[in-house]
Amino acid sequence: MALRAAGARLGARPLANGWSGRRALAVRAQAGAKSGDYVQVHYTGTLDDGSVFDSSREREPLDFIIGAGKVIKGFDTAVSGLVEGGKRKQRIEPKEAYGEKDPNAVISVPISQAPAGLEAGMKVQLSNGMVAAVAKVDKESVTLDLNHELAGQALTFDVELMKLVPSERLQKATFAAGCFWGPELAFQRVPGVLSTEVGYSNGEAKDPTYEEVCEGTTGHAEVVQVLYDPADVSYDRLLEEFWGRHNPTQLNRQGNDVGTQYRSAIFTHTPEQLEAANKSKAAFQAKFKDPIVTVVEPINNYHSAEPYHQQYLARGGRFGRPQSANKAATTPSAATAKRPAVRAAPRDDPSWPRGRTCLEENAQDCKQGHLPTPNHVTTEPQSRNRAGR
Image (cartoon, rainbow, N blue to C red; front, side, top):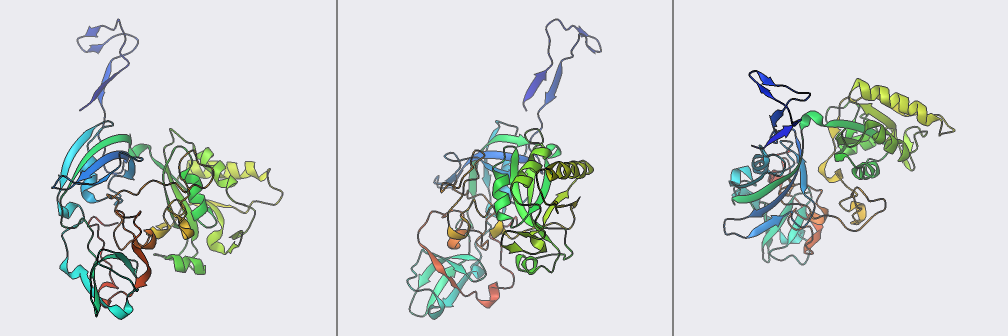
């Protein structure tokens, strides 16, 4: 455990019950990473045969909230307890990684219902978004394996904790500024913003889907929720970004997107945010000829959006052209970091473009066509990550 001395001064004299002098010597232990903390981690993952299946060393560190289900469960365990600069090597059994191989996840589809040109080893996407490996192709059928590539294997990670922000210091801010894809990218680029998530907020429906929200019947607004460190960026700075990224004088629309789900709104998490948002709204009114119609109210009934909407533009968007989410970025860029294998991005996550899994986003053998999903896997797609989301 690392110890750090703070406030030590020359000339301080030890007494029986403590220290004298204008400053006392304080020795305190740095707290290790725990559930709810934000961390940035470098890692190298190896299999039992010594082969490396993934490494972050040539890209940005992996960032996530411990215990939030964004990485495989065993990776949370490997990082927990570390202090900044701390390192650990830990072997993770299959049950804490991608689970054991499930024989029921090997299925067959009639060859007549499969895209032409399939070969063993290719990846395909089913109609429900699940991604499968082509195990065998014959004249009558295609055999698909829905198991994760690493299912059934123990994984060893060499991890190094690069940054730790305690949960007690983290704060959230939530904004509605039209279609959530663009505002999310804008907030991703703001220094001090640790992570972003798009979702639906302040509606009536209990578990809204994207399709339901788009119909305008749930009462929800499309929002981006920002996790930030107040030590690095203020709430006022986030408000400035919000006002500058949309037209707050348009009622229930932004550009060609029309409907209450595209309304301008600030959904606050604390009384302090509510006060700051109203003051900011009044100040920015002077910059607009027309009245600002932005709603300012406490957040209520928030739901995370589907995985394929998260970081949508940074991952390529509709046309497969990633836009940089780097803090210094101001214009779109084709460059983007490789997605790590330890993310909890299962095969049934449709967010991976063209049916790719987290280990093969640069592969070129994924088929664009979708295969029909057999009945026994349509109702409850099994997550390849046993920790779940």
